[in-house]
Every structure is written in structure tokens, then in C-alpha cells.
Image (cartoon, rainbow, N blue to C red; front, side):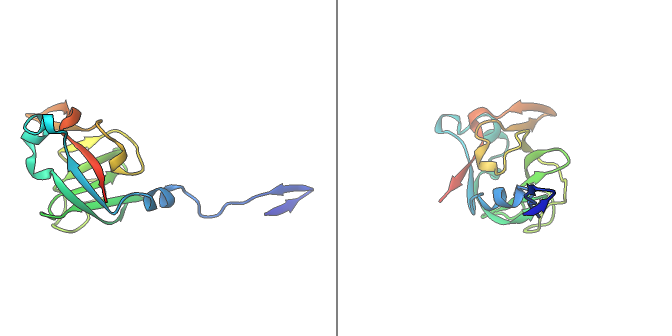
Length: 141
């Protein structure tokens, strides 16, 4: 707080919002689908992207996650494209490049990937397809 000419000014230092939001993201998430869409759409195209992911750190101000079964697969925030992306980018167990592309992604700018719900898209034969309920990321406790 600073008093200047009878006015009281409150100065906030070091607040960008992202750290608090990132801290609220879960430690583990699950890439999954609703039962009725198990063998359709994104699950049919990329079955190996499904499963449990564990938080591995921060990248571009948001958490990134590594697949528990195969650390080639990661979930991360691409700040240039403003997308959450599921990617095989980067070396196994290592954060993907700052802005690697991926196979499944969303344009939603949520603080955490599990709050996006059913707004994911994926590539199939060079076409962009809505995953609908065949792909989502859920908080795992």
C-alpha cells in the first residue's frame, strides 16, 4: 500500500494469475472417453493416448503431464497456438518443445486440461475432426 497525495494505492507485485491457477490443477489426470464411444472417433485413431498421466512440472506457465505407461506421450499447453495438446513430442519423459504440435488438441484456454470436457479435436487423414465424447481429460484422485 502506498499513500500518494491523499490517495491510497494498492500495488500487487508478481501476480500473473497463472501460478495460482496452475497450482489448482490436479496431480494426476486420465485421458478417457464415455463408454458408448470406446471404439469410435479419437479412440479408434489414437488408442495409445488414453490412460493415466502424472503432472511433471510447468511449461508455458501451465502444468504438463506424462503418460504413466509410456512417457513418450504428454499433455501440455502450447502458448503460441493457445491450445492444450496431447503429443508424442520431445524425448521420452522430457518436456515437449515449447510449442511442439500434437494429434489431439483443444482451442479452449482453460487453466487445466481436465476442465475442457468435450471440446477436443483430432487429426485423421489430414482432416480435423471433433472428438465429441470419444476423448476428454478427467481429474483422477
